[in-house]
Amino acid sequence: MKNTFGQNTTVTIFGESHGHAIGAVIDGLIPGLKVDHDFISYQLSRRRPSLQTDTARSEPDNFKIISGIFNGKTTGTPLCIIIPNENVRSEDYNYGIARPSHADYTAHVKYNGFEDYRGGGHFSGRITAAIVAVGGIIIPALKEMGITVGTHILKCGGVCDRDFLDIKSDIDKLSVSSFPVLEQKCGEEMCEKIIIAKKQLDSIGGITETAVYGIPAGYGEPMFDSVESILSHAIFSIGGIKGVEFGLGFGFADKSGSAANDPMRYENGNFVTTTNNNGGINGGITNGMPIIFRCAVKPTPSIAKEQQTIDFIKKENADISVRGRHDPAIIRRICPVIDSITAITVFDILQSKSDLNFYK
Picture (tube, rainbow, N blue to C red):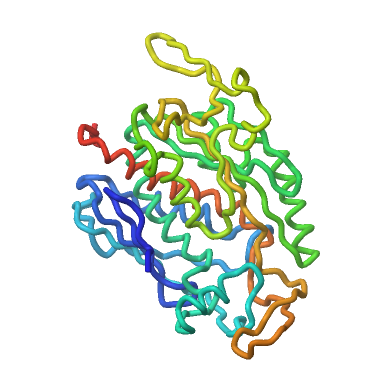
């Protein structure tokens, strides 16, 4: 089983959707980092259901940090965060009837029938709360270095938000937004599309866009530990993400080299590119420009419409209308998760250089 990510700072995620608790253990944290419980709580609130577009299951996320901090700062020893599950309805889940596009069947095969299937078990989106809690520690540490991370909904229900423009300002705006878009009107239209899908007993997906601002040049390794490969590795651990592209991404396929290349200049002695089609990465290494990437988020697979499926216990065909409390679109709540896993990954990449100073 592989539930640990990272090389310098490792994060291990544990727990199940309807178990006693979920949580994370962070090992390799630099000692002396400030841990702000209020900020962790705020980050968890950004992920928590709060709008008509979200699931009815709302957990208070009363987290506890039971090791690794003393006098409000990290000690350098393993830090453990526990988040109790306090609002479960396990009776909504029937073992053996696989929910289409969920991990019910694959988990049954992998774990020989011993998996906790309630609420999706270890494969539930509930587990991402632990990632966000870890992000609540890592994001401020990066901010001390002048590095910020922000994600917005670029597209949902056929409605498109604008791209990042003034990236630092846009990230600041997103950090206090209840519905993470850069144009409020677009957010209102997206919400309408999500509510329509909900009324139709269906769901919709979308595309997110993430920016990492302030990361210096020279980080990342060629080939198998490129910045793109490490970030993709982490991001694909989030259930529901089925595609990642950096910079212009698949748009490169329709460009000529002269149109796709990023012209290089010096401005006031600092290296810049006049465009950022490569998303801040060349040869797998950061070039000092903002890292930009987008994620394809699939529609929530738990829908009340009747679907064809199987009963993998009886080994026969079946039909299902998924019961329980589910989001008609997970794209709003997935944005702080992407922020957090991105921050965790960037923090780990930065630690690869021994001359890095996290302290001011």
